[in-house]
Length: 337
Image (spheres, one colour):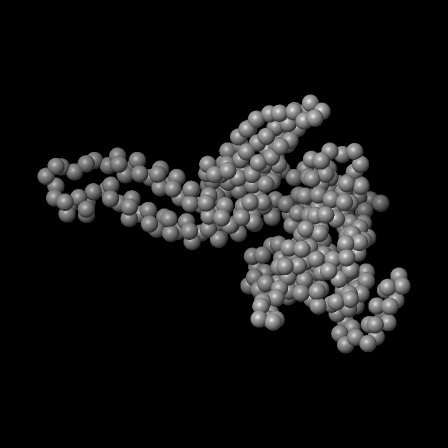
């Protein structure tokens, strides 16, 4: 309280009072170094040069992501005493997932303060959630861990998130992965690698997912379903954030499709033995796939970025539907009260 009084007195001598008041409404306290918070709202599409380098919110987002994970883990651990590690991990994941953070960012008005280009906003569905993580990073650098935790507990969770309902909400990562694979025509497999027991002799299942025969996510759980969910969750995260993995599965998919086309070409009738070499080159169907394969591979490479955005969109839509249902239930309950 004393700190806020001191900051309010200092505000009288600030030139940009409106910016400080704007952040006060969101944070519940006045920024000490307002430049950190302004940078947190600076999307990379609107980067500015400072001391010879581009400045945007990506570094603060990186820091905020780690701090947010620690804070939410701390809160969930104390809130749900006696719950197993798998339950705590899933609950934390539901809170820090992009859809939840996007929703919270809009609720507190962060979306109206982000600086970005109009073109970038049209296909970046995670921009608000990323800015929220950057804001957490700014609070940490400006005020420390305790201020971050207080902000999350008093300004976010108590007002916008029902932890009990979120913990019970089932997010079917396996269904989302299957939907993505079917829409984009990828071959995926759920492989049970083995079964063991924990220290209390409970069975533990280990599942590995492959996409186009390439190892993706893996997961462990006290049932096959739980291990598959964990593996699917990890696979979806790789699809969203691992460019090398995306390139590898698209290349494998292109090779599979090309291999499937070759037997069709080989089934064409052979030419007579007296056909000239020139006629073979111009007329034999077996040479056609070599010509067709080049645009197929080029087209696959050109579509890689679009497919990656498409994958994120499918995941985003599924998460949005689940969170929207949760939000509507909360509104209905409040209306009845």
